[in-house]
Image (cartoon, rainbow, N blue to C red; front, side):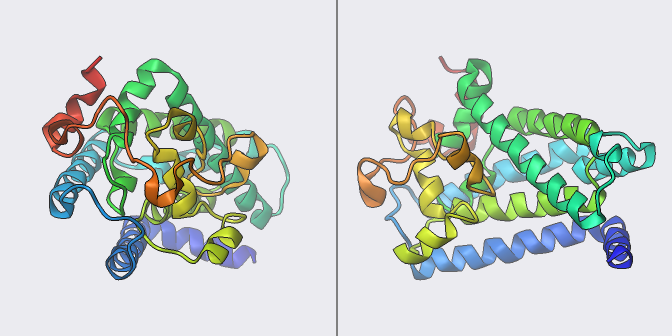
Length: 274
């Protein structure tokens, strides 16, 4: 097992960006095709217009991150490994257990961060750009304001230093996080029985869609990105929206204009509007 983990670590060091991009493209393509074949909801806005603007913000965010944090989260994990920083470096755990614990704690931290950005007014100003999307599909999962992306990366850096997870744990977490965001924001029809089973292991599209409801009580629920356990554990789990999956309205009640919610210049202005 140790040799396998060492080989995997070296592969990450050599090809981290290529692997992450390949996995993201594969999941994005699969979910986009699923949306075409079996969409859950009828879209209210032009799909091509939303895709153009949502993907544009992804490109902007990617450039910002590469300029400000060239090594990103995995790079910080490499530094932490070299310096032997973090709580997990003080605990003698089998390597596979260290990876599992690292991934789970990082996911819990992201859950906590998500709760915080909903309840701290300044942070909510930036996060609400994500929620102002009038429809939900594969492009919504990466639609975040650049300021929030920077904040999120700084939070990751802080907790990677404090926790000291392995390089493999951080890499797995990042890959799962990106893939899960595409999956659970997608507009796909899934059999109810399958959704019910999957919700015990991963956040499904029907589960996360409730989080994008225009009803505030529903918006402030189902915060999980990867794993659903934190919502159940901390009492933020919501099984179904009041108006049903097909009847619920997506977005924020104070932002309904196409110019603000769909077009890139308006999206970037949302945090600065009272």
